[in-house]
Image 1 (spheres, helix red, strand yellow):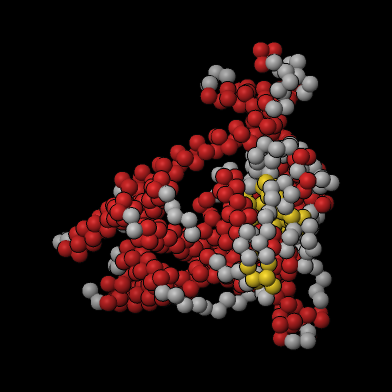
Image 2 (cartoon, rainbow over the protein chains, first blue to last red):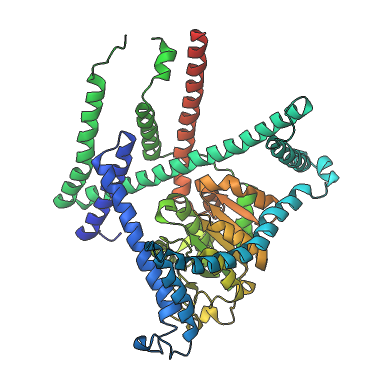
Length: 265
Length: 287
């Protein structure tokens, strides 16, 4: 494996430092966490602006108008009509003036009109109708008496999905009081919703642990790089990175354990 | 104060510390756990595995660095699988902070192709995977819905040039490739709501086979699309990535992370049970 240069190692050290600074929030809010938080917000915003320029405005607008002259407002360009969306974009900026903010309503109206025209039929078809069809498709009775246990489960899960959807929807049907049989249906609907939330919660736990695992892998690689290098400067930075948080952590734990408990009367 | 009251007043930071220790210890101590594959992951693997040489697949790396812990292993496993089988790949990154990361990921994977590897008993000799011939990275454009609709008509509408500024027509891989009709499938690896655009505006309008790689938080919400046949497979979180790595016989960070997941989940379940027992007992005592 190629040895890491000291310059690269400094960047990796910064990454390790920011990782520990972020996790320090689990103890309590602190300046290290604040620094990491503000840094990520600032870098993300700056990065996005540059990406938008190089991947949006430049190739899709300025490159297409580049056979015209800027002092003629690109009106002599062979594709001068690209000025129209550019003007609409500039009109959006009038939001910052209270007096002229009304101008921004024109491009917003156009954008919402196009987006709505595009969205309504496709969203309706693919996110509502397709889901309805899949819930109400004809029952394949052979699935209940398949060749094996797993085959037969397919039929029951289809039935469960159908009944579950009805019950969950009924839970949100407030025009009829939930008493008697309706109470039972609504109760079944709650259970179905809880199963759904439980599945989401389980996956969310896995997601959060995954983030932590990846950070452990990063810190492990960082430690290995520092120790395997045998370079005093590498080790010094490694000690500084971990040392700051190790000392702060130990001090806080001692404080926590030795604090005087206030007894409320 | 009895033990149940103590349990109820336990500072949550001790729970964090204990969980962190369990994660670190299970990561450092090497051992393996069995990973069972599921139908929705097998569907993605089998689909790609049965494609032929020079077939084109479309991989959308639609996530930011904040989701890479879960989604990077999927990207590495799927793309390496495709490249080893000598398929061609068209990449995009429709997440605003993702293009730089996606670019580095593609370079990492192409570098790893220079090493001979054996997967599932088949030895793949090293080969150079070239930009423009074996893959093209289209990059990022804002408003994913409009970009997806535009690509459905012609990739050149939203992307007149690739991420590096080369016109698409200058790439041999794009010869005769107009839109999704020429790709065998789209794999959207996503940590954002952009996945809705691929379902509604992409698959729903242009009818291409769509597979999803999702963060754990999102996975449960997209299973209905599997049931309706709108997507043919889902890789959910690190578990989905680990299953793909296992099927591709290419164990990586996802398989490595599953033992930590196992013990972390056991600890969390234990704390949930203890917390509930403590709550019920202290409530019972108070009458």
